[in-house]
Every structure is written in structure tokens, then in C-alpha cells.
Amino acid sequence: MCGRFAFAIGPTRLAAILGVEPPREHRPCWNVAPDMKILIVRRSPEGLEAVLARWGFLAPWMSDPNDPGRQINARLETAAQKPMFRSALVKGRCIVPADGFFEWQKQPEGPSRPFFVRPADHELLLMAGLWRRNRLEDGILIDTVAILTRPAGATLHAIHPRMPVLLPERLVDPWLATKPASTNLLRELLDGSHDAPRLDVRVVGRAINDPRNDTPSVIEPITVDFQPDLF
Image (cartoon, rainbow, N blue to C red; front, side, top):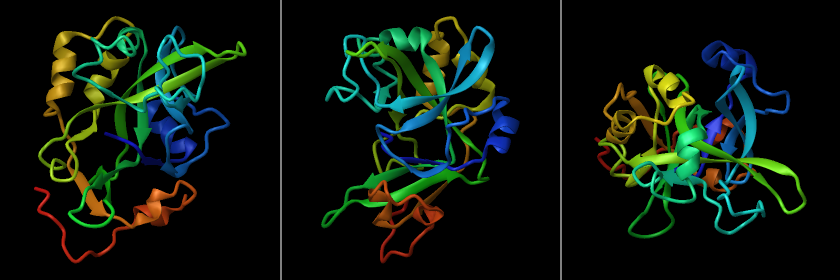
């Protein structure tokens, strides 16, 4: 799954990489947590746009932003069959940019150990997402988003069985196209072997567990007595 990530890139670099200007309200964050407003990139009639959406996808029948059924992740292999995500997979595909994401490895004893995963070249990660617009009980419209996940690849399977769906640049346009995603595209994303970036996987401190800890220190590696063979 993906339950926390970092996105601290400045607006100038974001515009240079994705070709879109972030909204004025966007703020860099080293510890992005569920229910926060996060930056997504999607296609509009005028072209690509970067907007803020609440991380916690609401199903078509939900009108409460804090509905306990909201989801931060959607499984790519079942999204097309789930009433919650089916329509968004057709017309609500988006990109969630990130510097990297955090994952927790269960330990035989004691609390889970957090890891930070980022491209080895420190380039931007493009995570596949689904967004939807809902009308709340008070009539206000809200955009919400879920990050798509797939079975973890060889680099990460020792930490957690699932990981975000990472988009290589060549699949950005097909993913954001207004027409339904092809079976071949979904199969390639699920397989995960497409232009997979080499990942830097590091153990980090448990300060990341508290979303109030929003400083670069949360991604700094720490030394542990034992680190599993991740590869």
C-alpha cells in the first residue's frame, strides 16, 4: 500500500518537469498523510492541469468527506470491477507526483520499521492515481484521490507485499488520455517491469509516524542493528 509520501519539490522545478504550474495554495511537505490536500496532475479540456485534491477517495454514493469507507489506495488489478473505482478508472485517471514514499515493515517484536523509497537518481516519482468529484451534504463539491497499488516488485517485497503503481514518462500520456485505459496499458502497469526506476531504499526514524514531523530529517537514513536483504 502507500500510506505516506514526501513531496517537497518547489514550483519552479515542478513546472519544468511536468509542464504545469502548481496552484498557489500548494505547499511542499516531507510527511504527506491521508486526508491532506495533495497535488495531482490530470487532463482537462484545456490540457494538463495541476490541482489539489483530498487524499481519501469517496465512492459515488458518499457525501461525507470523513466517511469511514473512504480509501487512500486502490488495487490496480481489481479497480475495474469495484463499483467504488470503476468510473474513475475510465475518466478520472491522474498522476500523484512525489519525491518518494514511505513503507513500514512488520517486525517479529516491537513496532514496524519505516523505510523511505525514492529513485536512486533522486528524480521525481510519478504515482498513478484515481480522482473523483463528489457533492457533499452541504452542496460543496470536493475532489478526492486514491493512489493505485500493485504487488511489490523484487526490490520491495521483503518490506511490504504492495507498492504504488509507478509511471514511466512514456506512459504518462496514455494514462492521462481521455479515452478508457487499454487492457495492454493496465497489464503493463500491473506487471511493473516497464522502465522501472532503480530505487534507493533506506531505513528511517520513527519520527515519520507523526504527521506533525514535517522536516527533511524524516527521510534521512538511520543505522540499525539488522537490515534485511532487500534484493
